Length: 108
Image 1 (cartoon, helix red, strand yellow):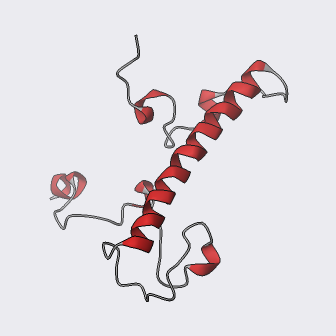
Image 2 (cartoon, helix red, strand yellow):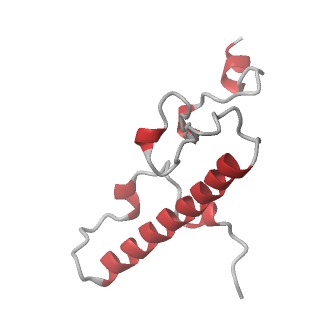
């Protein structure tokens, strides 16, 4: 039976210290090395799929407008982004809903 744990809850938390998950040295060709490479490849493919969906939205819809029709960026090529695109990661905490955070409320 397949686990109901989501992809993010399973093994792939980027906020954990990598050395805590893999305290042993990985040697190329070893079973643990191959497993680590498989996990890294699964994560890479996951984000590549998401990037392809976003690229389709940029190219075919006005959802992420305004992009000049003849100068739409290629999300796989950072040189084409210019000032049009900035990827924000979860750890950056720059996207908010305008409400104070829990820490800000408790500090009052």
